[in-house]
Image 1 (cartoon, rainbow, N blue to C red):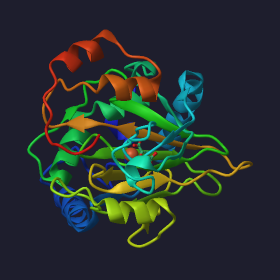
Image 2: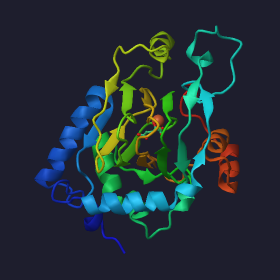
Image 3: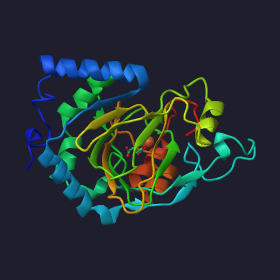
Length: 285
Ligand SMILES: O=C(O)CCC(=O)C(=O)O
Ligand SMILES: [Fe+2]
């Protein structure tokens, strides 16, 4: 059974010692980065052996990946909206060909699951995000996932439904597979359609490319920042990333339609949650 110390490089990032100088320094740095552009990277969070263990776990579950090649707009819609012109983010569709290993593929004893469910890690992420506390996203499919980009695949420009996500890069592509983002291109009061359209048409204004390495953890606010993972070319090694989702309230479950789109199936939990849903903002999902 894995202990946290087997997985996280605790000397470097002592998530188990809140209040220690190294903990506070890591939190301060992440807060500063998140304030500037909604993105922070904790370098080498994972021990090299844990990167290998998690990589093996992903490879062993790769057959459970739900790959769906779809042309999506940044809101994951696949259908045109006749109320908007053709040249508009709502009517601009680009290929998303990556896939997710679902949460229910991981048994509790796996290093990936132990890391995701670590209350120390959740508290550290909460401190970085300046919120009192975080809970593991209770969605049985979308809480713990791995994003798989096999050679030839890309995950195009989009917004996340969640306010933020935590990504641990596990296997780097040899080429491509880079995380790019445009910080705060929209906010709750402004959809930012014009700037978004420029990016969708190949513009590079405000685009940041992240230097993320295997074993690094990224904390990212993806609801307001357009982002993508660039294409992994044919002939490259695949790119594998573990993605951890957290919520500020316990017991949150994902949308029915999005779940079907990303995982190809829904569970009774999703159907029940849909009936009780309360929207937190009016932005397009
Ligand atoms: O794989 C990644 O780095 C992030 C993928 C992503 O943007 C997402 O899953 O929403
Ligand atoms: Fe995303």
